[in-house]
Image (tube, rainbow, N blue to C red; front, side, top):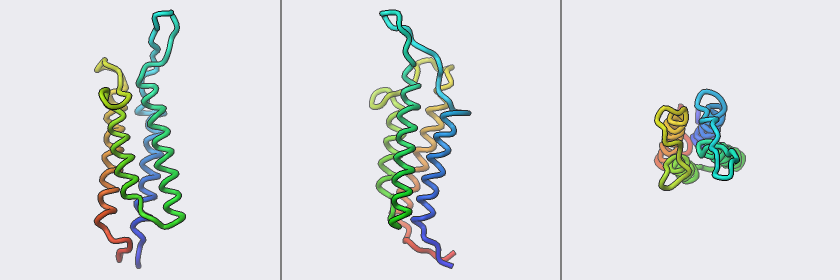
Amino acid sequence: MKRDMSKIFNIGGIILSVLLIIGLKTFAAPCTGMVKTAKGMEIPMKCHWLAVALIYLSIAVIVIAVANLIKKGKTSLEFIGLGILTIAITFDKIGIGKCKVDTMPCNFTKTFTIIIGAFLIVMGIAQLFIKNEVEL
């Protein structure tokens, strides 16, 4: 029986993205604290904005994977690019970053996000080297 590997990778990307969204809303949720500005207003900490950006990136992965499921295409470069972006956005120098305090829950958020991003990159690289149909 032949299986279309690109279909399996696209479904895997959808599963990883849904897992990231669920994780960001439940067990890997970032900090909920607020920062007081000089004018006395309170705004969310930057890890809140990290989670918002990651949810949008996850939605982009889902849309790309569904589009490629419909047109039966590969998502290798898209997964590699979005995986790199998912990891890069967690660092302070090039992305949004997380809180400076090491005891805050956003440290686990960053670790969880890096793992999901690494899986996306590995799936993208694997698609470059695996033929589209394999015998299972």
